[in-house]
Amino acid sequence: MELTRRHALAGAAGIAAAPLLSTVPAGAVAPVADKQAPSFYRYKVGDILVTVVSDGKNVFKLEDSFISNAKRDDVNAALEKAFMPRDMMTIWFAPLVLNTGGKLVVIDTGNGALAKASTKGANGLFADNFVAAGFDPRNVDMVVISHFHGDHVNGLLTAEGTPAFPNAEVLVPATEWKFWMDDGEMSRAPAGRMQGLFKNNRNIFEAGLKKKVTPYEWGKEIAPGLTSVETVGHTPGHTSYVLASGPDKVFIQSDVTNNPNLFATNPGWHAFFDQDGDVAEKTRRRIYDMVVAERLQVQGFHYPFPGLGHVVKDGSGYRVVPAPWNPAI
Image 1: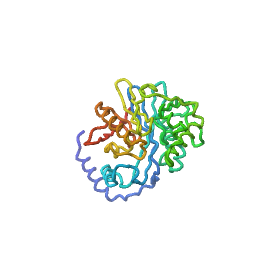
Image 2 (image 1 turned 60 degrees about the vertical axis):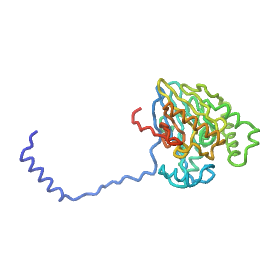
Image 3 (image 1 turned 135 degrees about the vertical axis):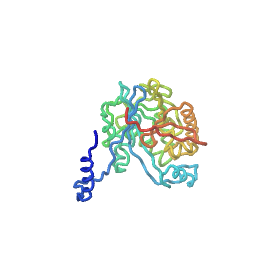
Image 4 (image 1 turned 90 degrees about the horizontal axis):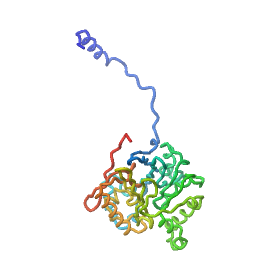
């Protein structure tokens, strides 16, 4: 459409008059938000829908004992390189939900409802985010547990101490079950953290769950598309998984590493949480060499949310390349 001289003059007059108009402040001010939106992220592995559900994070002051074979200066250098604060440790938690089309499967359960109260919502958020993601705990067919640390098993119970997934079979690694349910092992456990873990695990599984428990072996398909993989060291029965459907495959590493900014970059570092640091290190190197060689995507329980990425060799260690956020499924 041709711009006429009259239109041009009218436009110029409007622009000239604009500064003379008084500015009116906005009448409504949005309240300052104090919470994030519910935290979950979905992607497909073949025909299987994966939902990563955040349980939150834990931030704590770094003690020298946390990494037994590394100097504090080296740890702080690794933290600074990752743009994380010195002398502080951050650990994220991310259970999974698999919808196979025929089964609804939860992998690990987070820190539990009591942790939500004690941390004022910093973690223990899995149950809330699970519901926000559109799931009903009553519809869960299977809960698969990778190992018996509190951030993986405590969410099996509600705040009232009843089963959080009342209709679900609870699948546990046979070696892990045998160790933690052995009275002799419990009697020999060192005072402090290990005795606390034995007590916590007994309390969890004696709260109406024992009859629901089915131990599983390594190297077996324990749920549709989900094969268990031995990754011991972190605990005696620590287990990871390969999730496969059609041509797609993801390695679910559980706790092969803790925060990858420290323990993938420095696979020789032994975390306080690793029951056998030497074995855990050998497992870490073996598994990461495998996923690098096979170019597998990796889902990490303690990776920054949503915890999906690839692992590449980087000097004497490894580096996690996060998968780009995908708005489509």
